[in-house]
Each structure stands twice: as structure tokens, then as C-alpha cells.
Image (tube, rainbow, N blue to C red; front, side, top):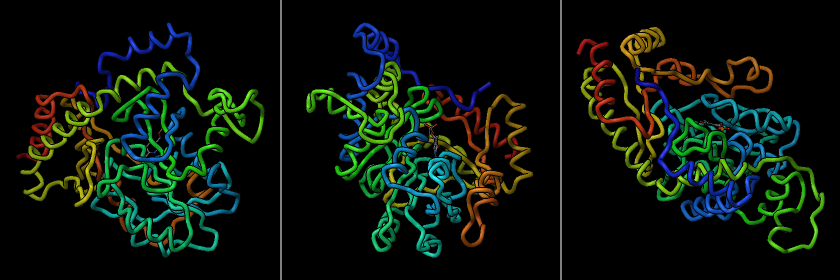
Length: 376
Ligand SMILES: *Cc1c(COP(=O)(O)O)cnc(C)c1O
């Protein structure tokens, strides 16, 4: 059986976790967390990056820093993971869903402006599959309407848009280091901030509302409770695991891209026969091979394809149930305009196995099964 996902492991993880234990520093914000934060800052050019316990929590932290209040509206795609909406629903805000573009499955930037009301506070672009949203247009709309941009870049580590790293373009960016992502720490994420004015509050909210970060830097001689807060910092053991991966980020990225390109080349004949669609990467977008998906004709054909692949030892999955059609989405959110592509395109999409340990031979095996399903 070729699994859908295997968590990334490069070899140094256990040594680094051991080091954290030997250092007697297993809570947060030790040597490994600092290394990971600095790596993200250097790689993306953001002003400040802070590791968090998840991308969900990074987005929650962004929603708190953005001062999202009950009754506010936040624009996002419906074709996304629940966390994108949860972070704002927790603050009492209403997610306003906008249709996606069928080529990238990203929010259709041309439909955003029509969804803006006097309650709108933020736009949350989700970079699906690590392929960037049309950020020039989105940043321009945000500027003209005085809105914040919070990038859900959970899938976008090592991706860029016109030379700028995803997650570092908007006011805030959220990364995920969940085990299904390109770089992992089991559960974890990071908040990226463009503007230094948010950094102090971010450090405080992340550390239970205390100014402990300042205390550890020797900037104050005792720490105390100064604001509301929560606990969004991960343990050093998780950060140590992640550091082993970030050190090898280029190797991991190159290997994934090679697998992605191989899928694309080997499935071209099926696409050229008009049987499936392959992913689109617009000009100016450098992606990170977070996922490889194909689109079948419709829901029925996709269901048959996934079952066929399973019978032949290949684990393929689909996602997402559009948020606006889920019970919580109906309760908390609303769809702006017409759902032309969100439901239709999501029902056609099947994800193929994609992970660091996947081999070229396995990719060929998978593409041969797909060709066989389509009688090619
Ligand atoms: C994985 C993912 C998340 C959630 O990440 P966690 O680290 O598990 O909280 C959020 N949004 C998108 C688009 C994701 O793919």
C-alpha cells in the first residue's frame, strides 16, 4: 500500500530532541525555537516570526492582534480547512465566503470587492497547495478599503509570489508544521508579522498575557500579567524536531518538486486525452509541491477513481467539504455571490500520495494505476 502521507523525517530529529532534554530546556522558547524563528525571518523577510502550537493558533493570535470583534466580517474562501474560519468565529466574527478560481482553487480576487461591507475587517487569502493567491490585487483592495490581510499560508512554506515569500506579504501570515505539511513538528505552526508594531503584543498574548519574553531578554527585572493572553508557544522538543527539517528545507523542497514534476509529466497523456485536469501554477508563482491533485469529470467519477486506486494499493483522498455547506458554516458564516466553482470543483478533486519519503518508482506506479483506470 502506498500511503497518502508519511510525516517527514530526515535523520537528525531524535538527536536534536535529545539535546533539548540534555539542556534541561523542554518548555518553549529555548535554543531550537529561536533557531526556527530566525530561519523563518531570514527565509521570508518578515519582521518577526514566532513558533506556535499550530497554524490554527497562529491564526487565532492574528485575529486577536487584529482586534477582530463580534459582528466584524472576514472575507475568505469556502474551499479551505476549518481553521481559517474558526480563528475568527471564536472572536464572534462572521466569515464571508467568496467563490474560488477553478484554475488554482484559490479565492477569486475579482469577487472580493463585491463582498466588502462597512463591517469588513480583514481578507484571509488561503494559498491552496502552496500556490499563491493573486496577492497584488488582494493587497491593493485591502489598501483601498483599509482592511488587514491575514494569509493562511499553512501550505505555503518555501513558496513565493513575484519573489516574495508567502506568509510575509500580508499584515500577518500563518504557517503550519502539522505532520501532513512539508516541514513538520507533529503539531505546530508559526505567526509571521510584517509590521514591528504588533510584535510586543504578540509575544505577550502568546505567553499567557505576561511580559515574560522581555524578562528573559533582560529588558525588565520581573515579569507580570499585562494583557489578556493564552499559551501559544510549543515545547522545545517539538521545535527540535522541526529544526532538523528546516536545516534540510532545500533538499526536502527539491525532492518534492521532482516528484510533483514527475506526476505532471506522466499524467500529461491522460490530461491531453481530455480525461482529467492537472494543477495550474500561474506566472510569478513558485510553489513548494505541497500537494499533487488531479480533477476527475465529476463526483461520481472521482468516487470510482479513489476506490479503484485503493483496490490497487494507492491511498488517494479528497477534501474539503466547502465550509458554507457544513453545519457550522451555515450557522456562523454566509456566502457572498454565487457558488459557481467552490462545490463543483471540490467534488472533482483527488489528492495523490505526496511526501518526502515517496520514491520515483512509487509515483510511476500511481500514475500507471490512473492510466489503467482511464483505459490508457
Ligand atoms: C493544515 C492547514 C491548517 C491548519 O494547520 P494546523 O497546524 O493543523 O492548525 C489551516 N489552514 C490550511 C489551509 C491548512 O492546510
